[in-house]
Image (cartoon, rainbow, N blue to C red; front, side, top):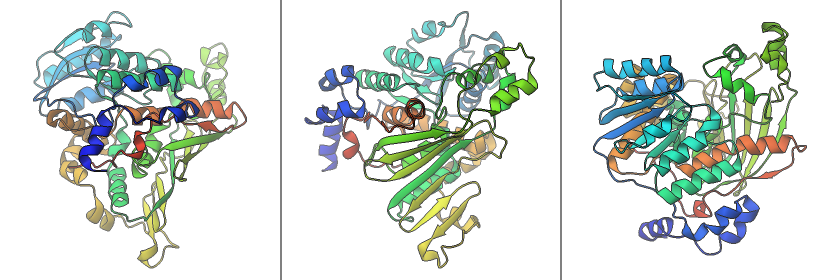
Length: 452
């Protein structure tokens, strides 16, 4: 298919014949009935913005870091900030002023004060860094108010919520990007570059994880992330936080852009660690001890793609062990694995042993985007610089009128693993279909090509 015809296809109505397969893939009745009305955002290129005017909803921990990063970028104006907690709101406003920007408007007072901010017509994009339950309603209302939505991970908590994001983005023709910063890490960008150059041959299998001991967050009772995130361990089983590990693997494998995730099966270990931690660190009558934690300490999900590839995805924020995202990609000609970084290639002469000497690989395969921004990324920090690179890239795309590196289909596909893994483990690891949120467009969409 020529580039011209492909673009016409992606921007027009979805091809006839896709509808019949959608019910089996999890599309809602609403999605099916609206199919002919929807317009793809696969390669959405919003009109160029000379200056990107930004609003923030939520500036406690993660959101405050985004405020600080935005203050380092050219072509940005911070217009408004909203938070229900006055202390963190004042801190964020002060940082903007101290950085030489005009004082942004501040919104607070209720859980819905953000709606007053969304009524403004001088904001182009909104960064949403709030508790998970607010991600979808705030993203939807942001797009419906005529603004691009950039939401923290996971973007949604149920399959229906994922479809709601997709349908709203398509209807409004506005971006809804999940802020999956790990896709912008140095190692992940380098491996993406290696995969694109065919270093590993045909890709067969990936392994990804979020292994990060976070029991200490249970002591954040009134404020901060643990005050609400802990509760999810008493509400849901499965993988609560899939996207940090899955996002990079999905990009290596061209998920939604030549292949897609088809189905999964999930298992979990006993849920013991947080109950023990609560008993050891809180009074018997404390709410942390009154809760029953049901999220298995370790969850393992196996995903199969339409083209037959496999992905092993793990989640563990409870057990005492070192941090790891276990970033592994295996192809017909070799593999890369992270934590620690190592490479084994068939043409290296000895693929039975890992090569841990990474300097030569960085020198040859560092992604051009990282090479361009490495100095600024190191100076501004944020998970080794990946936060800075992500925000820089978002602003670059909006100012130049080019598609973002992640779209709403990625946000939905990566986030729905949260819900589907829960459904699987609560039904004796029953296989769960993963919806085709692209409605068949994955077959013609071009692989992601991040340029510097």
